Image (tube, rainbow, N blue to C red):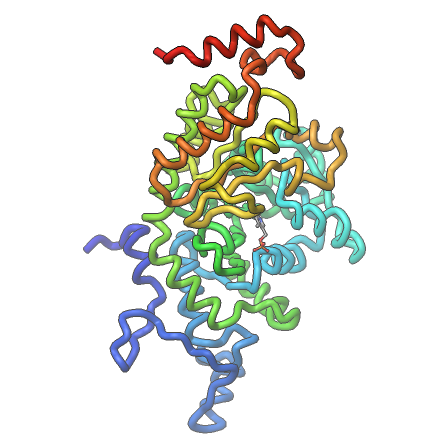
Length: 422
Ligand SMILES: *Cc1c(COP(=O)(O)O)cnc(C)c1O
């Protein structure tokens, strides 16, 4: 066997404990506390001479510790902590490592932005926001020590902007700052930020890591030196993952690689089919050669992910009609599960923003985000084609008109639609 097993092998075997009853994987220890043979044995654990099980809120539970070893292994690092949600993990990250200032690059998850914009400043924690191309602004924040933690997602939601992890890490480290990446969208199968120079990785395990839309959880990974100080925050804020959830999440991680590889392949086929569709103005997908972040994604990602964003022709109401007419894609504001989901960011994730803020982030009213599941690719493409055909008026085919003004043109276009396509 190799010195270091591959990611699939690690996601199956890492962290699994030897079970005296013969279970091939770590059983669920659904208990809150652990008993000791003597006070001396208890003190060994309490005083840190021996790592062991103690109390579940501390995370010192075999099911949770086993999960955390697996989580660290799949991000190729030393340590991990599991949380009750992605937001719990982000909050613990910022409270532990962001107190001297956080710089957030590009767009981020709505809850993360709210925490950074409105809540952490109430505690006196300075937070700053730069766009993905504002390298000079970022550098001056680092030079002036306004931020000691640089945080970003890549690819971002929903426009899938790809941010250069190595470049951010080099810049931050040159000024003694640290870098944390929210790796939720890519998953460790497609991208390992720690091997590209980032210091910490955070996940909403609710998405690809859980993968079945039945687990709410979070994870934080990094060196032991950076993860150890997070332990006390998680413990005393009561953010630890439940043992039952940890068991389910470990179950999910064993199939992570096969799920994500299949989602990558299906997303690529969906992106290609939609790129050729006359009622689609633009397809945003890092795997498409014409996509602005394609070359960078090719360097820092091993797969392009399961999220495809479409910008449709027509108006926002047409896009809403399209969403409503999909049958396989369910309308829901999440991602990464076995079932394909669809959202129109203007009505969900980015609903609370002003039109100007949305424009700044490149989000249009006609934008649709697809989370590709594990259904047959042809069924998904058929669902998309049928909804496009019935929801978007043929007159929009040229992308110029917002209302069908010219009847003869509309009639002509309709005629062309009826003709068999070459
Ligand atoms: C969903 C999500 C979060 C928040 O995770 P929860 O598990 O819902 O708390 C954070 N970051 C990204 C990128 C997400 O998609």
